[in-house]
Image: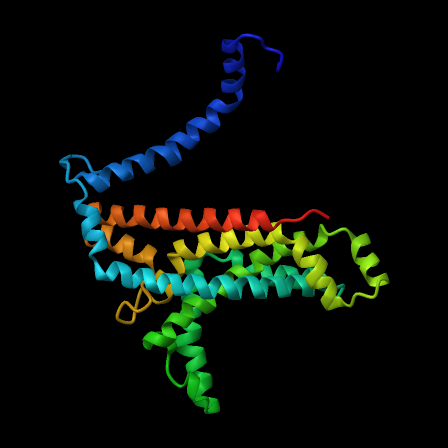
Amino acid sequence: MYNEKKLIDKLKVVFSFAFIPLLAFLVVIILPLMLGVVMTFTTWTGFSGSLLEFKGFENYVIAFTDQGFWDSMKITFLYVLYTLVLTNVIAFGLALLVTSGMKGQNFFRMGFFTPNLIGGIILGFIWQFIFARVFVYLGESMGLTIFSSSWLAEPDKAFWTIVIVGVWQSSGYMMLIYIAGLMGINKSLLEAAELDGANAWQQMLKIKIPLMIPAFTISLFLTLQRSFLVYDVNLSLTNGGPFRSTELIAMHVYNDAFLYQNFGSGQAKAFILFIIVATIAITQVRIMKKMEVES
């Protein structure tokens, strides 16, 4: 099958295996992306009957001069920073815990992973009830001033509610990646280090963490991608409030395009977000790849 000499025969072999995946990739990814880029330069909305008039960079000018866009971008960057650090630190800690040989570690793995199985919309409504009802009740009953009022009603505290829920949802998923990384470390290396007198902390810094760089690369990439594009939890938990203080960039783009019917500027903002996320993700992966070592 792989001994074809003529180019036409080789192309037949390639297309016989790759035609359907390439067609799906073209229809689902490339075509919508290209249509989206066209929308940023025209008045076309994607609906039948809409005019297709060239507007140049007008939609990008609107996007770059919209203060609300940059306010949402600032909130999103803070959200990404906190969730990136907290999620991966907690996930790595959980992975160490459930691979330490403790009793019932499989049960705890399942328990820590369960929040990831709950849909973001449902998760947001559950935590909305907890923050607005349960914590307030406990605060009033036990005299805890920090919970005396709903965090969802105060701009500063409302931001931390989406951080807490985001970290709680993603930590279990990232834990599985770190577990795979820990399980892949050659045990003979750890035994040799122990014979040489290395304690647990030294083994962690000198052996485990360097050999787990691929796991960190994947986890950081997924956390970045999830955090920048989170929408469902943001919608059901705070809906961007109070006073748009928790309106992350995905919600801002959606509202601009579909709620306020600004399809052109909304699509331009979405394309700017795509460029930013792609740049950060590619940079992160390239840096982490250079840090990888072999055992």
